[in-house]
Length: 340
Image 1 (cartoon, rainbow, N blue to C red):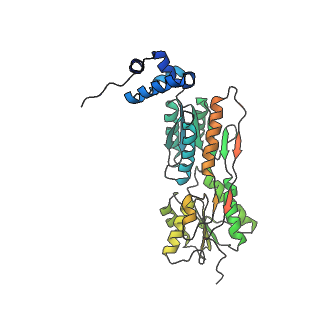
Image 2: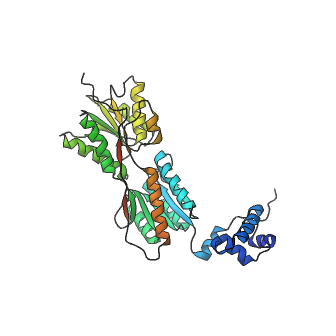
Image 3: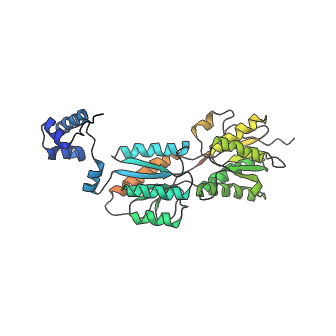
């Protein structure tokens, strides 16, 4: 197999009839080049298949035009929505996302952070605040802009939602329509501040009614539909059986509802189900899922806007904390408990 030589700036200059300096300026600072010259150079570059050498550019400029993002998982409609909006915003400003996931493992997250920082990313985005101090030390030593999403610690920029309130809202609604036997299917609580806060919000709402959320009323599961079915199976062994089940992520609630229906339990007549997230499919299930809307796309948009501001400001501002609103969405998977 033979390989063609990679086209260079010299090739584009020769083909376009412009100097190497003009070609370089057109490809790196297009606003400084006349439109007709820019169009000619870009046309030649495209025809030759020219791809800029980002490593060389980064060495020369001190910038890589990349943003590192570490998320818990890519197998999530919520994080996918957030990443899509971030990609759209960053691409419009000439930045490329470098994405890593850690599957809720702190050692994997530390490795991913190290890899992204070693690639010289210009900014870093992470999810949540709970991670070992060694990971925080690595982040802070990099001395680049950082934005936290969903949850965040003081001292750094953050775009958050009130995860505690999300749990509280959905539990408060179920209590208000008469439920007192509530089971919870949640994600793994260790090292996941979003899931911890949602469960704590549910617990607080129940405590207002003099109810406790016992450990036997909680089933920790991976954040998947199949795990939601497993969690429901576990909670159905409670005596007495719960009249309502909350999934602290919609995927868990959906899985639980599927399992209940497979066992012949009517939803919501025999058991109510509610989630948190408001993923797109939640409105299209039968019955449609009551949930709390978490504005995942807006988290991505606001995070990108905040990061872009940090990358262009001359004098660093004080940290920015943005908290986005959440909303209870009542649909058809919940109803008053059967008192029979």
